[in-house]
Image 1 (cartoon, rainbow, N blue to C red):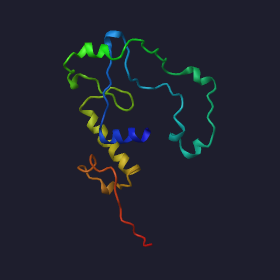
Image 2 (cartoon, rainbow, N blue to C red):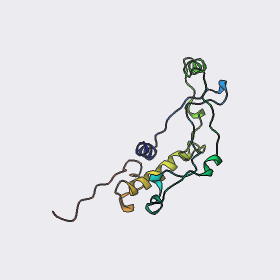
Image 3 (tube, rainbow, N blue to C red):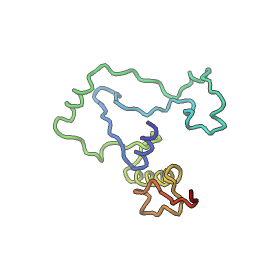
Image 4 (cartoon, rainbow, N blue to C red):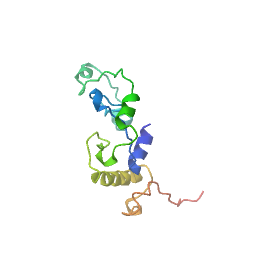
Length: 148
């Protein structure tokens, strides 16, 4: 799933999740910031070898888990919007760090990440990427110099 999220972020796609303000703070999606340690796959090689224990720090999580709402998730959504959808510019946009971001900064953030993605995963060099190609070129193919 992480690979898909990285590709979505590099392309500048985003997902829309409905919220139900009439029933309090209930939403279908949330930003999970309660992890006390990064997942093993994001640790450096020397850190990954050491074993991680949950110990007493598990009780000091940053956020409290909210209980699930028992109400139907479909009917409040249909009642709120009837036959019209809200204007997309009125919806808040969150970055992948969970911070609210403006629609003017989002393309810049996407372009920066796409360049990092192309260099790290796509086999591209800095010289392969021009300002125009960053948004479209995530993977580079280089001819092999050694003959087999």
